[in-house]
Each structure stands twice: as C-alpha cells, then as structure tokens.
Image 1 (cartoon, rainbow, N blue to C red):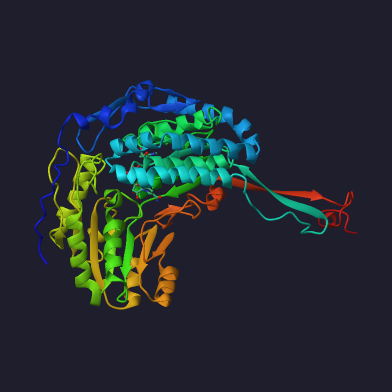
Image 2: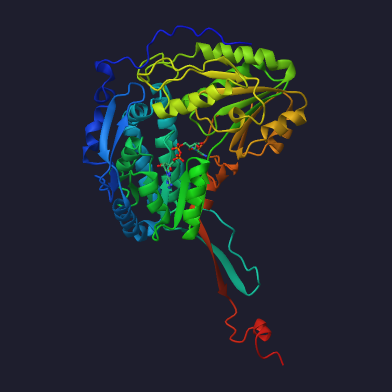
Length: 522
Ligand code: NAD
C-alpha cells in the first residue's frame, strides 16, 4: 500500500487574524504580568535573569514573556511550603477535605478560563480541554476532597498479646514535583491533590512552555482558603530550578512526570539526598487486535487512541498489532479515518486535531517518520501542512520491523505503526517487547483471550475494547521503564504518606520476659 492522496481541509490552520491574538483567545492573560510563580499565596516574578516566551503553537504568535525561576525562587517556595507544613499537616482530615471541596468549586468557576488558557499554551482543541482536561481536573479535586477523609491502614490490635499496635499514616513533608507540558493542568492536579489531601505541602515546577493553568490552579487553591504556602508553583528550567528542587535538602519527596531520560537523572539526584521517589515516565502503548475483534470498534479506538492530544499522551496507542485475518481491513479503515480527521485552529468549531506543542516537537516527530521511510511504508500522513503552526498530519506506518526505531521509541506525535501477528502468543510477546510498560489495550470478544491479555501484558493499565479513558478512582502508573508509583485514586496515598508503627505496652511489667535474651537468663 503506497502513499494516499491527502484530502483538502477546509480550514487553513495557522492563518493569522485578529481573532487569533493570544489576548482574544484567553482574555485573562494580563494576570500573569505579576510573574509566573505562585509562592506563599501570591504571584511573583522569577529572579534567574533568564526570560522565556510562551508561544501559541497554532499560530507561532508570542503569548507571554516572563522571567524564569532560578534556585533562589525555589528556595523561597520551599521555605513557604515548610512554614505552611505544621498547620496543614496538623489540620483534621475533615478540615482539609472541606477546603478541597471549596477548591473544586473555585476550579469549576474558572472552567472556561482554564480551558482557554490550556488550549492557548498547548494548541489543544477547545473541545478537548472543555470536555477532558478541565472536567477531569475538577473531578479529581472532588475525589481527593472526599478521599482526604479515608486514609486507611491495618486495624489496631494486640498482635503480641502484650501490646496494642496501630499504624499512623503521616505526611512526608514538603513535596517537590516536576511536570511535563502535554497535560499541564491535569499533571498539576495529579501531583498536588493527593499530596495535599494527605497533609503534605508542595512546590510544583511545571514545564517552562506551559505554566499558565498551573498558576490558575494554584490561585484557585488560595481563593478556596487553602493556606498560603500549601501549594506553590515555580516556573523555571529543568537544569536550573528543576535540579535545585530535586536536590533541595528541605524537600522530602520528589514526584516526577516526564520522559524516561530525564527521570533517570532525577532519580540519581533524589537518591543522593535519600528522598522518597515517584516516577511517571514515558510510554509506547501496544494496541492488540485479535481476529475475533469488532473491527469497526478497533479502527475507531485506534484512531482516537493514537491521535488524542495530537498523540502527545504517554498512554496513546502507538503500536497496533493486528492478527493476520483482520490486518488489511484494519490498515485501510485506520488510514481512511485518519485522513478524514480535521486539522484546524484549536479555537474553532470543527477542529479535531491541533498542532504539536512546538515547532521543535513537530520537527522531532517528522524526523522519526522521515527516518522510517527507508525501512517502512508511510500509508497516510507524514506531512507538515505548512510552517505557520506546528501541525503534522495523522500518520500511519506499516512494514516496520519490531526492533526498528519507529516501533521501539516514544515519538509523542500523531503517529501509529501497525504490524501483523499470527498466534495469540506472538501478539502478546510483541506487545511486551519494548522497555516501556505504561498502558495497553486488547481487542477481542472472547472473554478468555481478554483475561489472558490482561494477565500477560506488562503495563500499569490494560483496557479491553477501549483505549485512553482514565478515572479518578483508579490508579495510573507504570511498569518497567515507565516508572513506579501511582497517580490518582487512593493508591496514590501510598506515595504521599509514610506509615509509622506505634506499639503500646499493655502489661506495665518492669522486667519483661524477652529481657532474658539480653541479661538475667540464669
Ligand atoms: P521532559 O522529561 O523533557 O520534561 C519534564 C519536566 O522535567 C519539565 O518540567 C522539565 O523542565 C523538567 N526537567 C528537564 N530536565 C530536568 C532535570 N535535569 N532535572 C529536573 N527537571 C528537569 O518531558 P516533556 O517533554 O516535558 O514531557 C513528555 C514526556 O512526559 C514523555 O516522555 C511522556 O511520556 C511523559 N509523560 C508521562 C506521563 C505518565 O503518567 N507516565 C504523563 C505525561 C507525560
């Protein structure tokens, strides 16, 4: 199968015009004139001496120039978080819960601002931010407001006969978190909410490209009455503010979401200061279609799963393995549906797919596809429609070997590779054959095949006959090089709390029987 004709799309993404000015897209921009850090309950500018300009990836227009945070700003944020810690950790679960319910309401009141700011800085279609990023974040906040009152552990008991033992579940202290640019609002929520619900305070460093919604998120926390210093945001560069935060002696835990390469560096730094560590890293999710699958469902699921957020999703479907009898029909169905997806301006109705986060990311994705042309077939896509915005057409690739770069590496763009398989064993082995293990899906109507796939695929989440949905109540986290630890759900409290065994002697006996092992046994 060769290159297909690309359809003419009605819209011309990246077209300039008055309605595309950043201040028209998100009228609240002027609030960030005060700076891109939220420390001790207020916005303040960075002091690194280095500036960064946020660019609208749909148009290439400058959105906001701000001074990056440096080590001194991280120090100030950590100090604010330390000051706030005793009061917040000492509040009752009910008090924290009440404040977090108000937090959810404040976020709800800012829903449209959050959606517009997220679409502006990331290039996400408004329908995605309005229907996924923002409501998901508000739901997460409401979930953790409730979960704050449900920290659980082993029940107290007389396990030795002579003592009463119980477990205290205590906060870790000041948490230092680092987040990526692909879902800035949701990543801020996933880091901040379980941490503060459990009584910690936090300093979050968003990616330099995308701080706006993290700042609105923190402002909403302050408006909700969450005490100053509980939630702090510092927007600085990874090598500067990021490394300082991970190495900081007064930060007790590092929670990092980002690439596996940076995660390894973060792990080294965190280990040198013996910090609790939580790593949510890259992914390369397999999408396994057995020969009894509902083909239409699998085709729809593959296109949605591969293209969500323009493929910049750590759980995106990136490798489809299709059992031979369905292979040709699957490839043809996916190619047709991909070609019908409408690239366009994120702020216009009728846009399915926005640009990538930046021109640099677009060029990186194009580089993977261009290198693949020498060993595989680009069935559809593989084209950047123009240079005004960072757009790249949905791309389907076949004929690649399992050990090729396009199958093994995380591309983080709208690119799906399809490979055939024969036996069920082969399909599941191929699904497991990358270093990553974040998410996967299996497509079948056979309950035994579904059960086997969910048992044998090594990933933190396995969907059956769907791909992408997430829930506040369920854990998200990786296996293998995708990291360890869980975001969302009550499982995240395992990361953000430490358990203390308390043992109370019930006998009041001065000379205990076990003392014989040390003295006086004759
Ligand atoms: P990245 O690793 O380049 O950067 C992530 C964050 O780390 C940014 O805030 C960056 O400034 C910071 N950083 C960079 N170098 C640093 C250093 N030396 N020390 C401390 N901090 C540093 O990732 P990205 O390009 O922003 O995001 C894409 C990656 O994130 C993908 O690999 C994706 O799979 C991953 N991701 C994973 C999950 C998950 O839940 N597992 C979720 C979203 C994104």
